[in-house]
Image (cartoon, rainbow, N blue to C red; front, side, top):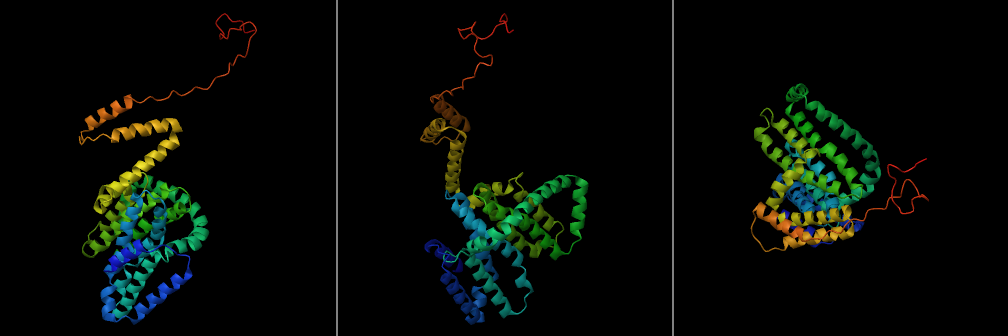
Length: 365
């Protein structure tokens, strides 16, 4: 019910985060519900599962859909959420385990639920407010040089870890850490560097880096939920957190592009968004064509591709499709590129008015 209400409000309400009355009304209602709601009802409505759905599951779905849709503005919107809400969710999942009093635990979980929802509720858009007033003006300029240093350090660390001896020593040290510290290190690996890069990406006009890190957060959110679910039964097994760290590094580093692979092969099919992603990919291809080719050549290539896709043929044989594409391409007349005129480096000569270049017998003296 909570998840349905969250989804309905997000889809049906118009965004208006700059009216501070909406923020005041939201938190007044939230505080009244937290304080006045009977403990029996509060513990049922605001549970760890509720926090997980509101703080991670629904944002993962919306972020996945944002990456797939042609609209690029929602990429930045949900990246702003994950910079704050995603990191907050990862670092607060353990708190309810150490709170013994039922009332205190209920207050904590309900506060978390309202906080996560405030970050992307259309009438408040808290993540946008925090980004524009704190993250962008104060953190952005300071984190940009830090990102370059961290990128260089991670590259160096990756090269060092390629040496089996160094990797084995790091693994031995990590294995002797307490379980709680292992978990903290694992979360730090998955959140600190991506947070810094996300802040830097959100501050630029380029959308590609927003999409890259939003894709990462979508997949990492799923990985974190799996870790949080399994560590109760499997956390004691040697190598559990090591496996999570290696999976995180695989998702994170641009050299692997693991997040993009998992996103396209697993998350998108599970969400049923293959068609949307293909549409976005086609738009990106068109944008790249217009960027790399002059308008006339780009128009010809675009028409050739459109003609190829217009064929009502269900044959998925790659050889047949290749033949069709080559037949389509053979009918295309590519305009010849005009070569720039090259000035005669020898200059004009009164003895050679016919325009013929110098020969072996030409007197150059």
